[in-house]
Image (cartoon, rainbow, N blue to C red; front, side, top):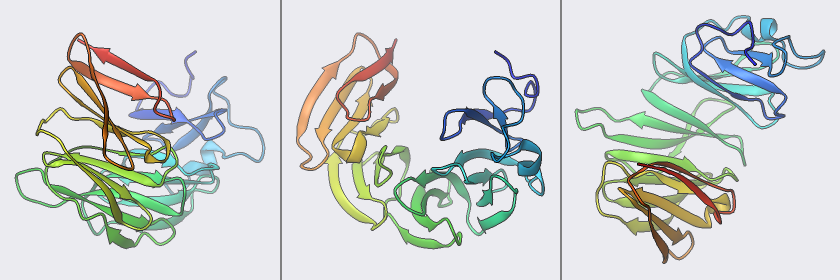
Length: 242
């Protein structure tokens, strides 16, 4: 049903880690997914979570456990804040950060940074979520088509016109490089632990071994692929086709 408090100003929404509450943006508030009432005592309160946090944001993502939230600022950069008190814990506004993701396996964030110029080039940086500081780049720039973080939160897959690049996020180590014909439509995705790597091109879905880079399968769909999703183990795929 419709949550009565949330009929305006919402740019995105997803479930809190415990799946009981719904997290919505731009208000940066937590609501009960079932009734629209504030969460029970001891859980993040929408009124308290909003205190001192009126900065326009593009998107937000909770950390595992739901105690902290990272928000991408509309003006560039990000902030990490306490979901219960609204206290600002860390921030980085020094670079034009276009996207930010939580690496669930560690106290790290993955940030996509616009490099400047008219070609749409961007790079990736691993950030410390406790301080907001840059730790190390993933060393991949260019016109990025897509990127994905594995369900385990350790592996980062980047697809650009040169190919697919699989990185270990916490260490910044390049583990796998796969050549792929340039296509602006490539959407690359990872299974749990990066065991399998997926990418689409037109009506074709490619599957590689994430350790060896060996091509495992090419699946021909009945039409161009709009989008697709894989289960955590990479054994089943659902695709929306033309």
